[in-house]
Length: 176
Image (cartoon, rainbow, N blue to C red; front, side):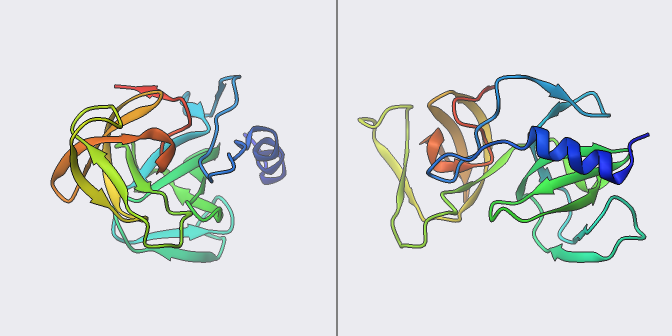
């Protein structure tokens, strides 16, 4: 069993660097948590009310509360049934594992403060037909990523978006 100090040291060693655009980049070496799953990794919130605590137990104070199911978070460390998570703003805290889902979701460029829109295409190519224009902060489901493009659904519309424009998948990550 890890102590909190050991867990925090582990977090410092495995924290994923962030690209200039704000998108996390996964280190090359694969690390496994106590669950046997890769660290770091993205998951999503299962519930509309998720308490984020200052440490890995109910005896630690609630730091803040998420109030939207489906938001992507990055699991940075694991201590027994608790997961240390990081949100799109860089805030970190601890969540009980049952409040997290393996369903992949992402936010469209949450690091942008302007009203810039991002194109959702009907094929994974910038020359493909536009199916929608998405504002920064839009939440959607990620179906697959090929390293440069991801199949993404937001507001009932499915298309392809440049992978680097999402927070909830790693740069160059491939998933089906």
